[in-house]
Amino acid sequence: MLFLCLGKLSREGKKKIKEAPQRLQKAVETLKSLKAEVKGFYVMLGPYDYVAIVEAPDTLTAAKASALTSFEGEVDWETYSIIPFEEFARSLMK
Image (cartoon, rainbow, N blue to C red; front, side, top):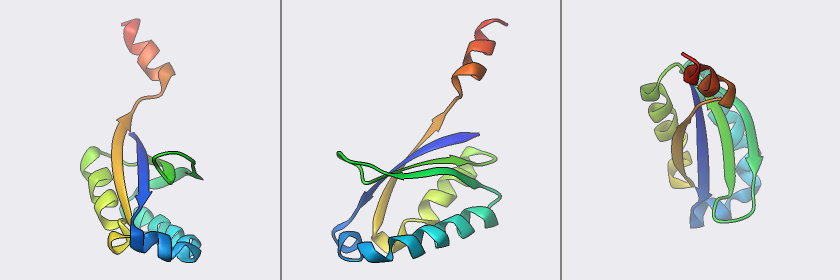
């Protein structure tokens, strides 16, 4: 299953922005331990600071990953289940 994760830095996270590469590596390792994988990770402009595409076996794993990668309150995550358009289009033909 695929998930879209939108992250906002907290005030504390903004103060520690130079530690972002290390935090991302720690998050990638955490997800691997849960049998999940970061497919893409981006910095963005606008109301969110980060966007990630994550593949996880199920929604419970995605929720656990979101909770465990909150970086001790430095990033708040919103996680959404997403479906590839091709898969959705195939489902319409059944």
